[in-house]
Image 1: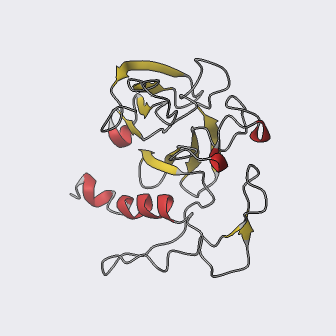
Image 2 (image 1 turned 90 degrees about the vertical axis):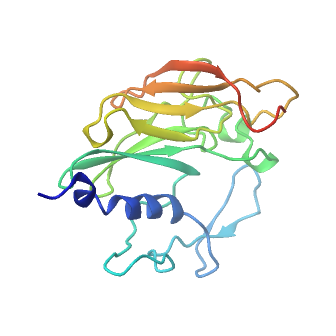
Length: 208
């Protein structure tokens, strides 16, 4: 009988290319721009995973590209039929070009703001079937808008259960403002409703 690890031995590779294949290169003339910093377009070529080195017997292919700062992946289902939950942090370190409060992107509670966190759900073929989930659309609703959102995981692994996520408002770099803003929350996998589970966690390796 094959172990669960054997049955899902392809998952580490899936995680790798789900997170890594959005990086731009200079290989094509295809470009992407940032509406906040117009005129600073960059070359964009996700490729087909040809630069990822894997052990003999493994093969890398593109599952999904064009994501907004993906930081974590969780799986639910089995090898024949499964869902892929991708946490998009929206942005990492703060800068004027990824300001989630900018009116250019609708402000921090815009449902289409690419710089605030959310969760996208794909089927086993890479088709988006739900999301964005947990998007902050008003104060106290969804993941915290300023980020970063770091991780997601199902309570029972591939069998599902509660979906846990971690988020923070530490990207606000005001002195002492968000040092204990980190949380562990649960996210409804269907509706995206966010419920705080543990709050007031210290953030980062030193106070802001």
